[in-house]
Image (cartoon, rainbow, N blue to C red):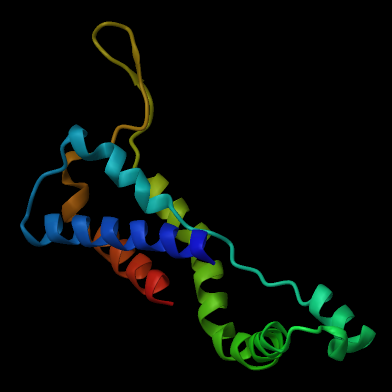
Length: 144
């Protein structure tokens, strides 16, 4: 959970940074390209109930630590059900967000020195309505 929290904190900071740039009508600069790819951060969240269900069928009363036993029952019996919608949204929107972000890249090309240029982003990306929508969708995913 701590790893997920840190990932989504970084993602939230990145969304806020680019939202600020779009609000201030800044043109995209190659110096911030590495920051742009941080918008790809995310995780597929999945909680497997198998071990908990096995423990329940084996006899959860065999867990001698009452605090741990109560936390397991509370999480898998109640809290996880409450969070299911947010977890589903976070997981379901992650891949489409990544795909949309990657779609902004220009096609690879050879520059005047005959070197390949790949993953270049257009200068006006911060003004594109789809990019602004992407920021809002990622922001909602982070909140979820």
